[in-house]
Image (tube, rainbow, N blue to C red; front, top):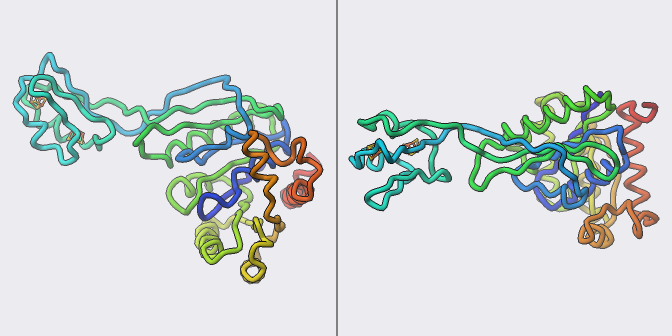
Length: 297
Ligand code: SF4
Ligand code: SF4
């Protein structure tokens, strides 16, 4: 089983719509993991139908038993995060503010406060229209620890791929270089970076490359909207050559990608499947499959 992670230095480069296209091209031989849990939107393109839903707990939060509480206000005084709220009679914890430090629990004179696992989001195993399974998640409002949720989504996708003897796990990673990205890199076989021909596109590519080198992972790059700035497209290609990264392909700016997205589709689907951009995406996917030895599986 091989694992491909698609990344970009920032949002809006076309990473998710490309990953959705690759997911459809891979068909039922893949398990898809949407690890962009902070702003997941691949479900808008792949319309997954949930088969299983699980809750995701991460960290702890305080809970007050108002029956036991004697309204001493000690918890209010010690909480540095303004997480204890009261109307003078009832005491409640604002779970968005609570950092789970347990200080209030320690000072409560009547043990009215307990620390409980904190619900941070949900994750799902679903079916998409290619016949593949997709694992995706929804992080709760204000919830943190998305790196842990990324690991949960990815591990579930790998378990399903292993049990069902699938050739590939295809991961849509988070933008940037933070904890969720690091979490999505572990165990990967190949990294695809999607960038744009701008100064920030080149800068973000370099930052991602530095991170990937630490993991000693092979990587390749797709330059999206390459025709919008041929100067920066050349700069990026020179950088890829210098770093011995694979140049996987360039895509033109194409409004059909946006039109397809608005309709909840990939550009590989009708009425866009015969477009030049759709053809290039198919070629890029064949190239990636060839590099990973997936074309014969
Ligand atoms: S656990 Fe810490 S952050 Fe949460 S309410 Fe208690 S003192 Fe405040
Ligand atoms: S410290 Fe305990 S008893 Fe005092 S107000 Fe808070 S919950 Fe109530």
